[in-house]
Amino acid sequence: MTLASRDSRTTSRRGFTLLEVLMAAIIISLGVLGITALFAGAARQQQIASQTTRSVIASKNGEAIIASAFGQINANQPTVLATEFPPDVWVRIPMDPTFHHLTLPGVDDPGTPGPDIYFLVAPTVGLPAEIYSATSTGADYLTLRGRDTHNAMRPWINAFQDLPNRRIDPFSVSEIRVTARSTPGGTPQLYSYRLPARVKRGEPEANVWPDATGNRWQFVIDGRISAKNQDFIELNCRLDSGNAGPFASIGQFRIAGIDGNHYIDSIEVVDYRWRSDRLISLRDRLVFAAGSDQPSLGYSVLYRRTSDGGNQMALITYGLSARTPSGEWLPPERINDEDGPLIELNFGDVTVHYDPNVSQHYVTMMSQDDARYLKPGQILFLQAELDIDGDTFTERVGADFAVRVARRQKVGPEVRGYLETAPRAAGQAMLQDYGSTVSASAWLVNESVRSLEDNSDWFLTPLEFRVFQLQ
Image (cartoon, rainbow, N blue to C red; front, side, top):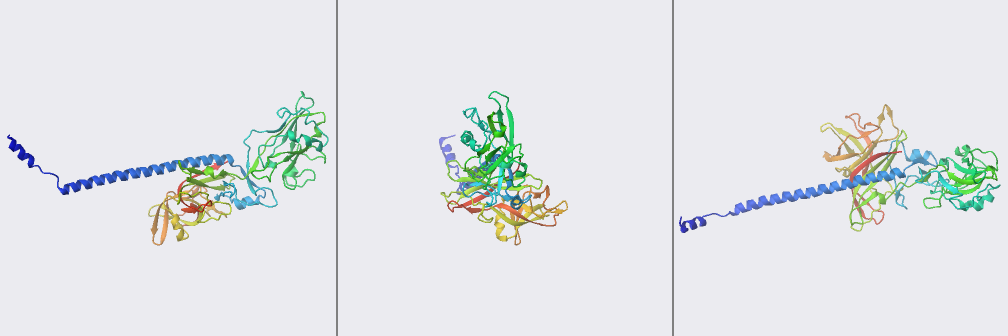
């Protein structure tokens, strides 16, 4: 082959046409767009997974904190409990406007010390709680030698240790125990001071009864009232001290009856509970993104007292996003904040239906203006009047767990929120007859609220719910 023939073959080769170039560019562009969308979707899924993980961790931490702070709910007036906590009904736990912690509903009664409703919480310190020890205080062993009158004992009050809590519930004190010896090295003898039974029943006593503020309670030998000048130990429970007042302590006392020749080794409170109205702080309910002063996640708390005497809490977590970068979050969940569009958990009326065409339950809002709440992902805690075992509940029964809106669909003028699962209450389906409907109420997450701190607007995204039992 000659050089000329090779040159002629080289010059006869065709290049790409413009149409081919355009087609290749389109194919490459589609591939790049697909890969970009794939990465964007993966990033979005990773963000959702990360947010869900943080939500689960936050709710688990909240469960642990609440479980340690929760105690038997009691009230100065027992009728208040039935009003504030109807059996089997979910109730929102409000926030104290001063200390920004979740507290119990109810208002102060001017005639009684402290809040109407409170938790009875076990102390975190070891029991019995020692309030006097002749050895540990470094006092002279003769310091608390038996005296004839309680006035003579007053100089020795400073040798006593305060209890580690305020607002000691006097009815929960099992006994105040005194250990005494006839000689410093003799055999110890135990003396038990208890609250008289008649005092526990609320019967007036001239000699043993709390003072006008309800703070000072007198405990007598074996809880028996025998004489006007009998021995007693007065416990200042500090019921009116709130959360920042002085600690509970021993007031005046008289221990002459033990024997003037006996020596007091120790005085200790064997067992007690203290009254608390704090459940969990706002800071403990918020999660902050790294390097940000604004919370990205928070949760609200519902409570219900079951008809069998149990206690349940429900935590509803939601994502937080401020409209402005300078917004400060203080949720509108104070005791006096009304349920409605301005509070993070709204309380709305709904109707529960069943759609046989898709074999799925759905809800509709009583007001079409509220249909905006039925977005996919919305969390609903339902409660309705149900006929359980042939007995119609006079109070609404709260659902055993929350349900989530899977999709929203408009059928004619009606906006439906189809649910992922069937709502259940009292261990059975809330809708027994698929051909019927049930009128109910629902706790649900508002889409936007206004902070109490600076009136900044915040967007809320429902994330997760957790229901757990409490002792």
